[in-house]
Image (tube, rainbow, N blue to C red; front, side, top):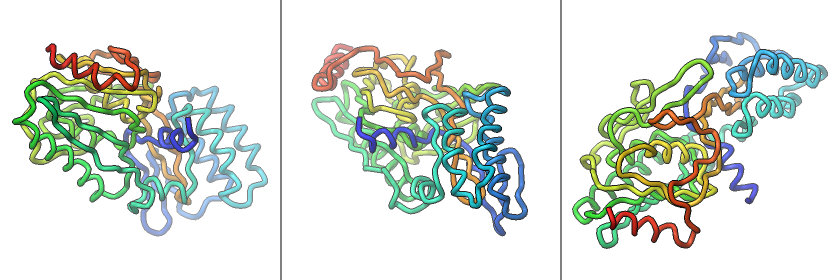
Length: 328
């Protein structure tokens, strides 16, 4: 596996609320901590570790150990950059391998509004002999116009294909490294049943992810929609996955799991079926922290690779899925 591909999966973003930077250098965190003046590097690192306490690997004992280790490591730090190595280790210790510490430059490239850091190849929708295949690529972009265009490609493609699709649908998530799950779910909403499709399982709660018409919802709040989507389809759906299907793409596959007339094909996924929360620090660095584990509509928890219903070699998976569709 190339380093480039692995990094794309590591940075896959599933959810949630990003702590925001407001005027005058005041940073409001998800825990309502406020820094009125620039913190010292030591205070900066201390606050960062405190906010990592929501990580899925965190416990009171582990958090205390990591806090002390970071404090020792940054004791002589003179600027924020001197703390990054220690915080990078703390991020993994408390959030697991799907978590990542991003420097301000890396965070801007990944979460900023510029397209320069985007991984947002346009999807494709094609129909052949009654079967329509939707190729759903990685979607990492801070630019709303890019995301909107991405959703439109699928929505309009599905609508145009509707009359010629009388056998079934293939949702191809192979090599999708993740990114923003909400546009993916909204775009594919005509193929998903309304209601809860998956949950994010935190240490202290369970948050429902649901579909309502053309809208993808979290805890009943709209996260993305696909205006003008075609009506719901009752045709069977085959979902294709492989070892590079990761992060939010695994969440999409999990959202189809347990739905009637759906089957998954291919190879076990990457194993990052978890939800991340980007936490922005004072200088613009981001802790992309894993805070929850994905669960399907039946309640089965993941966090490990999703094993497809039908295993298949890469060169045979599409044909195997099509055979299944034609036998429905």
